[in-house]
Length: 288
Ligand SMILES: NC(=O)c1ccc[n+]([C@@H]2O[C@H](COP(=O)([O-])OP(=O)(O)OC[C@H]3O[C@@H](n4cnc5c(N)ncnc54)[C@H](OP(=O)(O)O)[C@@H]3O)[C@@H](O)[C@H]2O)c1
Image (cartoon, rainbow, N blue to C red; front, side, top):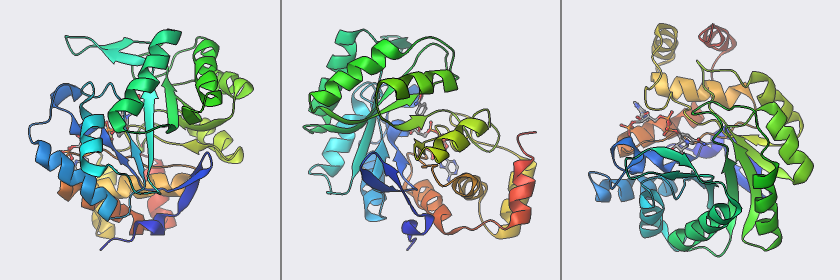
């Protein structure tokens, strides 16, 4: 059985999590909308993640909407003591499955209460404010008002730690001037390295960086170099892409998403894959 603790741990606020976690977005239906094709399979994925030692799960009440949180509760409640569930707020889904802003103070407050209710928790360990200025990438604009609402919810005891998502370095600095920031969640992977400098700056500050789309997201990574390096190491491309992220910086926490137990096992086995320096150098060239 894989020993995922081999990938090490990092602090998320005052909690310590293993660097290999799980992202629950793939448990909803197609397009992250509606129920999954096979609910029992979704529950099995979550239970297997916990059985293999995962103690960091990423979710949102707007996945489905509501679907992934309901499945997490059904599969795992009462939760193991060491499990850290991270959610995000700031968006909602339209009836046409569109992704829309939901960042008025009332919407942000309701979103935290909805996550707590659906997950069966009294306080959220970590809530990310998900900026919606750009689509998948960040765009400038003040997030002070939104982070301020989360800081109020933290003072009220409903949120233990605050993170920000889909943000620029200016927005991270703005948030850090308002409250303590536990993590940043932006798009980043072997082929998409716009946040290289941010990863390093956050590492110096002891702040976790949780890349979303670590495997490329809706279009999983495809690269001849990645396949060649993986084959040479006797690993799969997805394991190799995750090992590269783990070696890239010690503050990177992985939340690969999958709806399949087989892929989950494959992904978590990346904890034991050590990339030699020449492999890292080759993979560093993938982003161009
Ligand atoms: N903050 C944000 O705005 C934001 C945005 C997107 C996602 N997220 C979070 O980040 C997490 C990770 O992102 P993600 O799930 O979208 O993308 P991802 O982890 O990069 O990739 C998931 C995709 O890769 C496939 N996959 C997973 N393991 C595989 C394997 N071993 N071999 C082949 N294919 C594999 C999955 O399909 P199968 O189901 O078939 O395995 C799925 O299509 C999400 O779960 C979510 O919690 C946050």
